[in-house]
Length: 235
Image: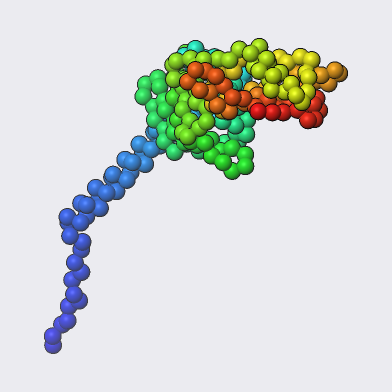
């Protein structure tokens, strides 16, 4: 009587087993590294998110006050207000960070600012960590109309010159009793709001620099609140 033996099962080749172990270890190290980077930059992300949320909820001045001294030195408050208004940061809703890194007391975040209406503004934010924690040190918008200065202060248009220019622009349509404007960064797309009065009416006038040539001469638009002057406005 002949006994039949079941065929012997052959296991995976040893080399394939080693490859599988190596790939698994590589994936595990990647997950661990990503988790460590996520945890290390968590504080910086929270500060950056709060910076933009504050700008939208409380205004550019409140956000500027939270930035680092070097940020404030390179971008005085009126400049930051121009950058904020020029890029529509008042419509900020949330952030989506695609790349984050930390090296000692500095961190870099890259991603987009999600604005109301569905638009997204690419941004890179650099932060520095001091005794009081993380602070925004600099930022750069991609393809934005108004950029913060990179360490060199941009020229400013004094508030009284803005007021005089708008008086001339609006001369044929409306006469305003008073116009009070803050200084405005002399870059294309910069915008600000001036306080105006006409009789018993009080309101605002939006001033936008539509173009600035190499000599510093600007073309601007002055739009007065309709409650103050319904027909006012001009180029």
